[in-house]
Image (cartoon, rainbow, N blue to C red; front, side, top):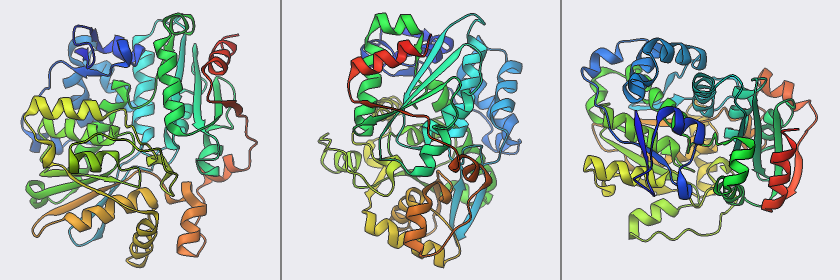
Length: 428
C-alpha cells in the first residue's frame, strides 16, 4: 500500500511508514494512492465482524502485511461489539461505546497500537504525541498502556473535558503522561503540529501521532460502518442515510471511505455543534473558522478540523460533489431538548449522539432509513446528562473505578518550549 502526502504529492510512503510517522512533510496528511473497491458486498456483510474487518483492512494494506497478520491484529483490537439499536421506526443508533473506554475511539486506538507493534522493531523508540478533546485520550492511553518501548504524551484543554473523561486516562501513569494545557483543543492541536515540524525533536524522541490523522486509526473506523449495515434490514440498504456527529471529521472520512469501497450509503449528513466551520463552508463556499466555542458536546469543540482535506481529496477522486453531503449545526439548547425527547421515547443518549439524531430527523425523507452514530456512553458526560434529564444514571464499573483515583496530569501553558521539555523528560 502506498500513501501520498496531500500537501506534497511527491512524498509517498508505505503503510508502515505512514503509521510510524503519522504526518508527512509540511504537516501533510497521508492518503491512499489507490482506492480499492470490494466485490460482492452482500456476501461480505454476511461475515462476522472480525472476519469482515480483516478483509476490508487487507484491501487497503495490500501485501505489505500478510492477511494472517492483519487478521490477528483485528482480532486483538476488536474484542467488543458495535451493536445497532432501533430508536424509532426507520431510525437506528450505531452504538460505538462498548469498548474499554466507552467511546468509538477504542476501535482506532487499539488497531493503531496493533499496527505500530506490527511495523516497529523491538528496539525502536516511539513517543506517541496526541491531542484530545475528550475521548481520544482515553482510547489511546488504554490501547498503549504498558506496551514496551512506547511512551505516550496526551495533551488536553484544561477544564474543557468532562471530569470523568479526564479521570479515565489521567490516572494511569506508567508509560502514559497527560498534560492539561491552559488553552483550547485547537491550541493543543497546534502544539502537536509544531512538534512534528521540529525535525530534530521528531528524530530524538521517535515522534508519532495517534490522532485520527494517523491512517491506521482512520482505516479501523471504516469497519464499523460495514458492521452497522450488516445489522440493518436488507431492505434498508438502498436508501440508507447516515448522520455523523463531527468534530475533527475522522468519523465522516472513514464513512466516506467505506462508501468508496462499495458500502451502500445513499448520503451522509454532517452534524456539528456551534463550532460549525464545515456547515458554513458547505453553505457559502467560504472556509472561515471562528474561535472555538465551549459546548456541552465538548468532544466536537473543534473549529479547524484536521481531516477535512482528506474528505475533499476523496470526493474529488470519486467525482462526488460536496453538495451531496447533508449538514446542520445544533445549539446546546437544541441538543438538550433532543436528549430529553430521546429519553422520553425510551432511548438514553448523550449530547453528541443527540446532535446527530436531531439533524438526521430534520433531513430524513420518506422511504429512507436513518442511522446515526452514538460515539460515547452517556455516563462519560454524566453531569450534563443528569442535569438535562433531571435524574441519576448508572455509572459503569470502568468509570467508577477511575473516578475514585487521583489525577496524575501535568499542567502547562500553550507554549512549545514547555511541551518540548515534557517530551524529552519522558524518555529519561
